[in-house]
Image (cartoon, rainbow, N blue to C red; front, side, top):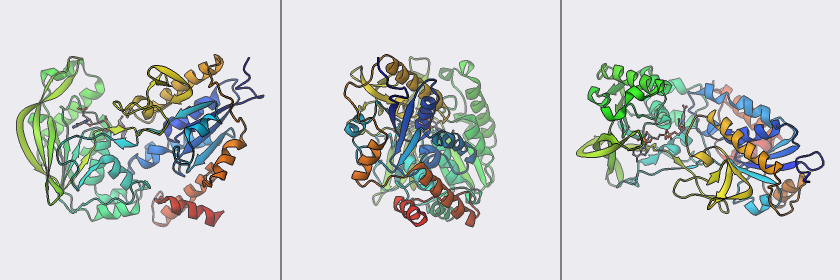
Length: 463
Ligand code: NAP
């Protein structure tokens, strides 16, 4: 009988990705009754928390307080944080397979979907992911520049990410001044000449992906009107609002009431449009300056929902900057199974599978598992389900066949032999402390380090 998972031979687990789903998987493993487990939590960045740090908008600090839960998980002596270690660069899958009984991919969706229309490659056309990463000081995106000297910006898609970027562009930047927004982004927003943000939904108000709280926040923005065409706020028969849930009804009621307010008198406008699809980004001198839209009608999608179909009626709106916010997509990791079509890791009940066959010892959680959907809390139940599969496999003896180098020092030795500068959780707490102190000097919650080399340098100074 296998002794793996007992004090005689703990279960060794590597979790790749220290965002919400990775932490929730760690939490579920550490809480598993009767299990002796050691968890190594890897992240390619020296900082943990994934999209809570790099994605959640700076004016939504309450959402970020969830990190207190992750801190508690990280304080468990059975967990180690290996920050600044990238799978595929610093360690290979084979290295992990040789050292861990089970590997959990919690790598999220790092890329974004395309619109696949002419002009998408023009200068001034970006993904919302890039813009979000920029204002949040993410090391991957800090170097980007967005031309905010134009008066019109178009945001394509009406999910919650589109709501975030629209709000950041349309609000008074002074309401962000005390947050953890990157200083360079705050400065750029202060100089912004943007007057109108066009928010473009391809379907109607009953199908909108945003949450009620997010759309209602627009109505409370100072200095900005939410403008909706009354005729576009009407819900047609295909939308079946009578069968919709309370949230959808609330969203529709809100936009219909807003539509009655007309243009308003404020200097900035969010022009929320429904049933329009961008068909081309129009440029001049290689830079985008307009978006050509086709009006849509809604038709039955045959699955109880509504899909859009072009009407062949076109219009053009001005836009010196276009942010497509049409969903995220995973990036394949060398050696890890990946489904090109869906953009995530194929699995059955959280077990990574290839052509329907589970790969022993490999699991997936979060957006890498189910695609980019749900709120942060959605990941907790999702990670618990994957951990249930892991524990069932352990009980049934379904671990990888090969022997592993089961010792706590093994991974550390490997990384040190490769000269990888690993950041521990205690070192992250130091970075955290420095960021808070730096922020306090400027009346902000935090001033993030936005360059990895600055984080590493600050640690060597304080060591
Ligand atoms: P999302 O909710 O899936 O929204 C994507 C939007 O893009 C939808 O409006 C979709 O329209 C539209 N779209 C897709 N392809 C398109 C195309 N080719 N042309 C035009 N429009 C297109 O994705 P997301 O906004 O990236 O958010 C990802 C997840 O993170 C969501 O679960 C979201 O709730 C969550 N999140 C939450 C918060 C928060 O709670 N504050 C903040 C940010 C993100 P259709 O509906 O017609 O497909």
